[in-house]
Image (cartoon, rainbow, N blue to C red; front, side, top):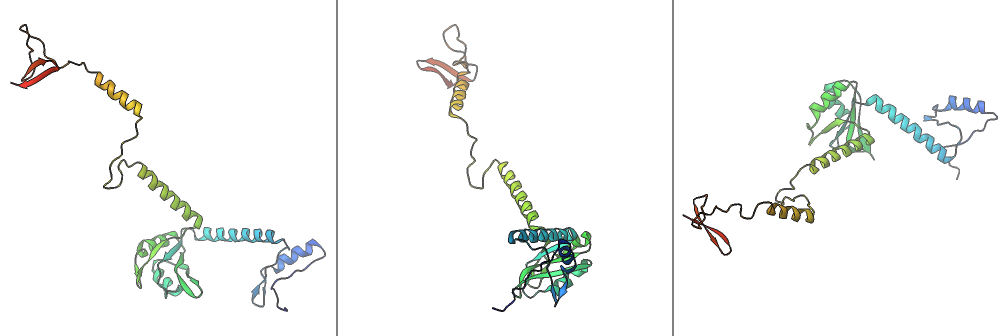
Length: 231
C-alpha cells in the first residue's frame, strides 16, 4: 500500500563487510530513531536473541539497583515522579524516581532508587505506612519476580510446617486422638486387665471363717464375690 513496514535488508558481497556494518550502524541515530542492525535471522532465532539481550539487560540493571531500589505502592492517582522524588529525597541521593503509568494514568505504584543501601533502608523504615495524600504507603526493597515468588513460597512452607506441629485444631473444634490400630488397642487393654490377680484385694481369712479387712470396711464373702460395707 506504499507504506513502509519500518524494516529492510542489506546484502553484502562478503561476511567481513556485513560484520563491520553491524558494528558501525547498530544503535546509530537516524531521523530521531535508533537503528537496530543485526545479521538476518529466522524469526525464531531473532526472537531468541532478543530475549537473551533483554534478560541480560534486566540482570545488569538488577545488579546495579540491588539493595538500593525501593518498591512503593498504594499511591494516589495524582502523585507523579516529582512528588515521590520530593517525599523520598530527605533520606539520601536519589538516582531515579518513577511512577508507573498506563494510558496516561498512574498504576498506583512506582520505584525510587538511592545511591547506597543505608539510604534505602532508612527510607523503608521511615516511609512504610506513612500517609501521603489520602493513603498509607507500602514501601519495601524491590525484588525480581522470581525472587518474590521464591520468598512467598518459603513463607507458605514455613506456615504449613508450623501448623503441622500444632496438636490442637482451630477453636471450638474437638481434639482428635492419633490413630491406633484396632487389634493392638483391644489386645493391650485386655492384657492390662488380666495382669492384676483377680482377688488381689481380698483380705486374709480368720480362724473363725470371717475375713479380716485391711481397711476401715467390713468385708463379707458372698455367692457372687466379695462385698465391702462401712463399719
